[in-house]
Image (cartoon, rainbow, N blue to C red; front, side, top):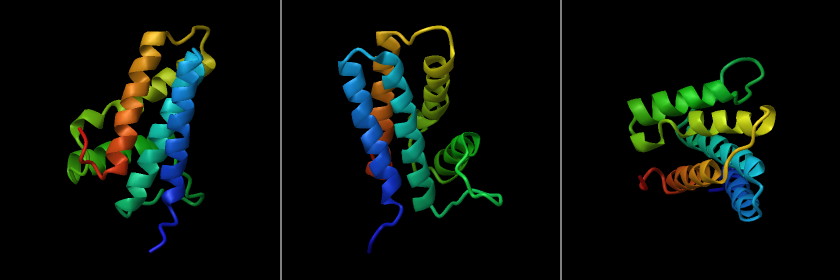
Length: 132
C-alpha cells in the first residue's frame, strides 16, 4: 500500500542530511535549524501513523500542537517511543530560535549535540520507536 504521508519522513531525512552537511561546513546556526525541522517533520509522520490529525479549520501542524501530541500521546500515553525523545522537540526548537532570531551564534558543541539528538529522533521514527 502506498503511504501518502511518507513525504513527511522523506522531508525529515532530507533536513537531517542538510544538517549533517551544514555541520561539516561549520555552519552551526543553519545546522541547528535543519535539526529542528528534521525532528518536527518526523514527529508529524509519527502522529499520522498513529492516526492523529491536527485540529481546527486550517488543519495545520502547529509547533506547539506537534510537540504536545507527540510527547503526551505517543510517548506518555501510548508508549510508542522512548522517553529519551521527550525533550528533543522542545530543545531543538529553542536552539533553532536562537540560531534564527537571536543576536548570538550556536556553538559547535551545541550544534553537534542537536545533530546527535535529531539523528536519534529521526531514526526512532523510521524504525517505529525501536531505537532509544
